Length: 442
Ligand code: SAM
Ligand code: SF4
Ligand code: F3S
Image (cartoon, protein in one colour):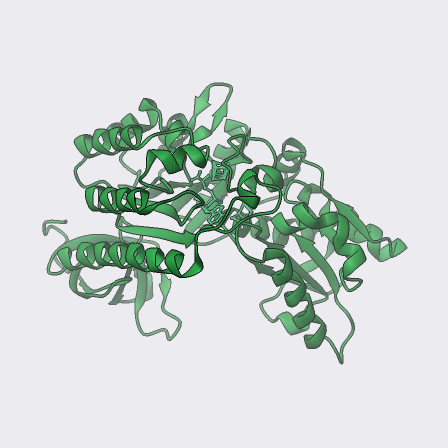
């Protein structure tokens, strides 16, 4: 059987990881990955529900697929991911072009569901939460990702129920994968050529498998000689325990960029959001880490114009940004999500919200620009991932995840290279590879 599958992925890195694992799984029933969507026999949308009109976007996307395949055979259409989980009851009824609906904890059933559909034309939705079985199943299928920097999901779901967030409803309760299962998968990724592992979870620092925590996992993974760099995302301040903070003292491979979403600089707003931490505790984490290594930098997520945020609260967020000098962050206006506590809270005026977002983003962008400017004429270490699309330059990442472009040969791909930075803009550092590898590195 020569069947092709195309997956369009929306949302977070966990969806990206899932899409790669779906490609690995459906190989077993004869589906090969294709990047040419118009040739696909199976078109899968891996969806995200976090903001805006997520549901409508999916139906819009299905409309596009219909158009693409107007004069061809209809592909098997699968909707997976967080919108599938949230909206499964109405999807098959509302849009007959959809054949199968699969929630994020049901991917172990994908092959049976597809085969069943092929044999019986039975439209199906699979949306129960069964993370244990999912990962047991996926761990028996080789992870074929062969990127220099690879994602590895170690934890799924969330029990925190922030009032704005759909994740506890779409991904289910917190679940940590068995320690050995993760180490084995990391070894496979190293065999495939990965040099950097990015550990993933909706609350990755809540990882706890039989009292093995994220800190234990980082120290275990760095024993693998093929691994050059370790990162993890995304964390909650409440789970940033001292063992994780102290791992920055002992680890040689953990990168000095801490992505620690704070959402707001105001305790009042944090309380309204049900975040369960204060700015004081957030700053304690920041200063403990800075004391361990002053080169550690922070990035974050911000929700602007959360219901109840007044001018004073907004000023406090600005104050926090000035204090921490986040080098790279995501910021969005609050988007009411169906089924969450904040869904029906009175919204802040749209114009005011936009004004606040622009001020915050300008500040965050300036931090990014300043950070990159500081690196000009310095030598940094960059892990080379591949070539730029136009093939003219090597594409690498700094320790802080910033893109680094420079001239060089393909044999540098997969290596950590010293690069002297000549120039920069907000998102990119431009440099030259250093011949003399003994030069001082920033
Ligand atoms: N678990 C992480 C934490 O607690 O910080 C966040 C995971 S969530 C998938 C990623 C980000 O989406 C959040 O940090 C938040 O900034 C943003 N987000 C979630 N719900 C949102 C909403 N209703 N409106 C705007 N942004 C939202
Ligand atoms: Fe969402 Fe993160 Fe809050 Fe969980 S901790 S509800 S994933 S924002
Ligand atoms: Fe979106 Fe689900 Fe990730 S809602 S951000 S794809 S966990």
